[in-house]
Image (cartoon, rainbow, N blue to C red):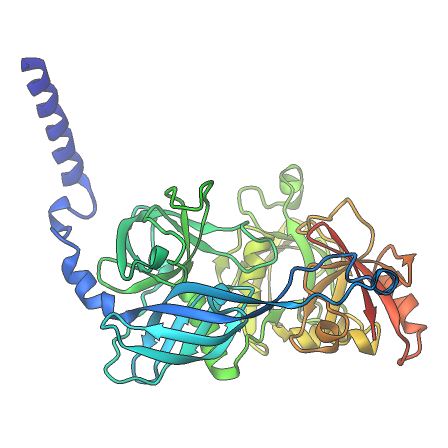
Length: 453
């Protein structure tokens, strides 16, 4: 018994010493989170969405010869329903932030407030690549959450998650920021997640992650789980990224995604010394699109981009995130290393539709898409030969008629294999503008064949 008391005294003494050395004394933490939840809770809402989605693609069903021979109908749409959360960010105008996947394909959206009032909502705009959507309700006496500066977050900061997991309205969990700048959940998306151990479960999507001042720091979006439930690894979209996307969705109804006009990858560790970038990260430029913003600024293949507007770039994924969230026409300062020496350039960000023209419109039925060689970010790098789709303008011919998506790799035209962009351009530019042709591509390890009418 005496040894137990001694051990307890040692533990208490060590804890008090640690607390006295901490940047924020333990005594400054709130005794209860209730006052914070009381203020923030009314700004978090329940979202019920209903609608239709296209049934999953079957590569054989998409082949017109297979459908004709076996009499297989086109894939049908299916009814879907989803339950999630949202955060009011403008009380006067009724704007609510949620996740794209919560309202994707919805024809009916219903918002229920903490006080049990329920309203029909309209979709203002949605962006799949960041998983951010804005909806709007017309209602009196709404409460909005103030937005924090998520760039000021540090690993170890206390955070609170509020949402509606499993239909349990306004469930509150707490934890800390476990990591920052998490990427890799979906290589085609723009990701810069806050990782937290605050419990996040199905239904929390679109809900609030707040700090101890009651400010919004992130929108809860995803979890890593083997069971479908919380395992202490949850992810939230930083509010600074949300703010950028939200403003564009409210202003334009869509995101006018910026394009710099380069293809590249992370700096290979074995080349870091030779390139003069050891320990500095950066993105290695492999190709520069003709007449793009990067070429006009003077960027060359072999350059290593190490910072954008003074903020360091860890790799190609981070560079892609930064540029993709900038607006068309915006000027940025690019810090790079060329032949081991630092260099600064100023580039103008182009829109995706401009990139589609500067990268070469290979056929009017695929207008709106830009193409490049398969780069190291693609899961098909080193495995396939073909032309990679770099970007697709929404509702363009490439999206509607070609059914193309960013990240697709076109491997054949009219059953003839292609080895790259030059082959694709040569084969399609020889076709009549009214010609119907077959486009064979690879997407998520599936082989797709489309008849481009």
